[in-house]
Length: 361
Image 1: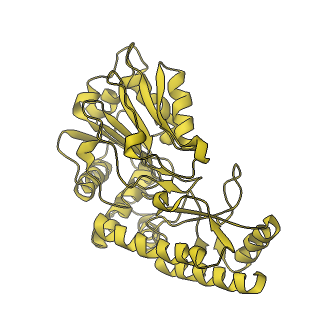
Image 2: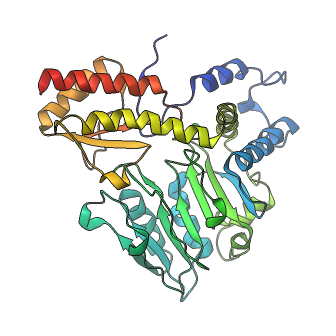
């Protein structure tokens, strides 16, 4: 079997070792005579998967004891609404940092629930950079400050996070969670769809501080209250059991590779190859994101001619590359280099880019 050079933005690459392990256990999980997908979520075997996955995430991300780890459904898009439903209060607006398409979606959902305010925006720069810490203005009465740590469409990433004092900091980390160490205690809530760095689609990780769980109002539907899922350890209703199982395998894979700090260096080495090809192309390739905000997960770039971009995509696909077409809203080219994308794929892409320039420059 020939594996594709998978640069999809999401669902994205999953480690080959994880896929092979899942394949081996697919029909008969640990001698149970059934697949994990057929198993009751109330069974001891599945509860073990659920508990071990939470414990592994705590260990790898150094999550303090006063935080809860939840495995929920509905993707990060559901969290756009669930957060304000649980945390917005009259007289306390939700503050949002506007950095691109995903931040905008989060803000639009919050506006349906209550008052909001824009704490900073880089729209004037076409969202091709993240704001500096000095540009972010957080109202003292804000219920929280929400930001998107990595914008997959623009290819920008926060390199540091604001100190929000008593105002809880909320982060959508769907596209860069576990790609680098962070101080979880700086945040009130971190959430992430799994399908980029944690596993397959179907499960969403929520890391939430205990005091914010207690804020869940009794006036919203049961399934949308964080305290519902905390009390039942994410087993209030039937969970996406196979997705959680796959997340547990990915987490173990990260641990076996030396943890998050090792992955950060690995990701830096991978993306540097491609950024160097862009910067060393004498203007043939044009990086989209401003250098100080460049993402280590999503590399966005253009070629001076749209016809050449189409040719680049067509020829790359013939060479086994997948997912290099830019998002439909912005066009151009994009290589998503999440944790599971191997160094060899980035080396191959770099060589293809150099060869393509020689033939078309």
